[in-house]
Image 1 (cartoon, rainbow, N blue to C red):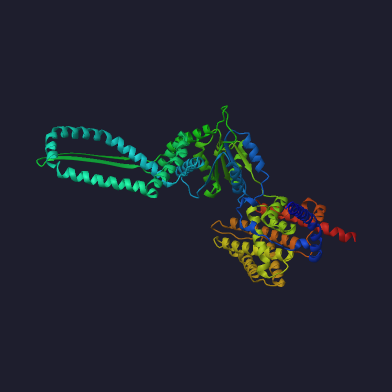
Image 2: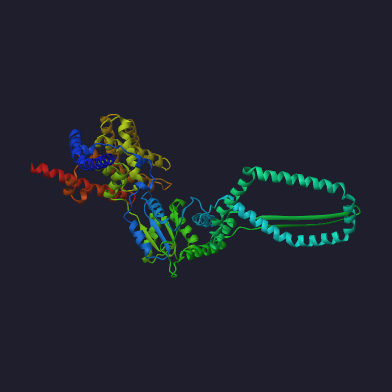
Length: 619
């Protein structure tokens, strides 16, 4: 036996050594072999063995922390409560950052995430926030804030209310009945003597039979009598710790939740009558109705602040200071869904009455235009943003390195050229980055490209995006009053859209590219006047279309042109103007100015034109 055990230990040791050697040698031996079989341009081949990161978009396992996340944590450590807004473009990852932080804060803290409705009423929103704080606190202390518990609270309140209402009337009724019994005692004794014979014998016999049956059942059928009583006793004992955990603050949350969820209306009716003789009757009746009104907005604010202050006291440490491990976080997400910046400011003006409680942190995600109001706080112009927020953290779009970390975490095996393509097309916006990558990985199977080379994938992806943009642009212009001078440009846009929709061969793709190039050249100065004042907005749309078309053609030349995709060393030699990050910045610049976008694209093309002309001149 000892020899067998020794052999098993040796085999296990050798197996571990073999696995370690494989892990260290396989990457160095297999990777060069695969590169030799695939070819020198192995990085331009689309290989995606695992796509779970694109399917489970909201899974926090695939989230790469934003560079401003540590800034948020540091600022909160320097604050004993306050209101911090997370600002940034839509899709940059504000909601993801808040969800990831909420997951980390759940241990020991009270975390209440709230989704802002698209159409809100301040009183209803504050009422919903009030309820969710109560529910989270009750759930954190081991109770379920569901309808059944509220029903039990309501039932108990009704029973107690009825007892309080009935007690005075019942006392008077008992006194009256006692007096009647004393007065009618001789009649009762006479009836007792008349019925004492046979009736008393029958009652005695029935009692003896029933008691004998019960004793036999108790002694000879243990599973039917004693076991249910034992189980009931265990259930009662098991429920004792839950009753002991109740605290005044927990009871207050239950009462508030009952008040906020239910419309109380109680009706109590009591009737009594006595007919000792056929010749006379006596009776009494009483009905009581109680209904409650809903809290108005000022009352909601007062009660909500009172509850938050009580919960904040729960977070105090033994020395009287606030414990940073027991804080209250109220996360209000998607505030930019409610519409314009003015509506967001109106919401903050309404709910800021509950801000400013020690040990209570309000984290709010807002759009860029709302956060810009706080940035201007040093200027003479002041608004409600300045007085509502303690600080604003602006999330910038992801850099190329950050996008590479995100996509390599979600899609292992995706190489640098495809990541750069998705990054440039999305501008570093995380939501668009994932959307374009999801579109990208479907192209080889959809078109049967087989090997999925970078040039083919980039051409199809970019032309698909250009087709969708051009179609949306024509739909947008259909709602404006287009002057007759725009007819040639509209015809060029229609023809380019048809070529993009019908492309099936390389000549079709080149024809579509030439049509887009002519459309870009024609959109520099569309003319015409309109009595409805729509020409200025239409001209702006034409400028945006022209700049976007030029952006897509630049990406086509860089990722799907005749020259192979440059290596990392070649990109460094070109310099800052030729960095693919400049293309992502140009994509974001489209929302600011089409003219400045064209300048950025021009510098990028000139940098690469000069870099590729130097080797030719040297040779």
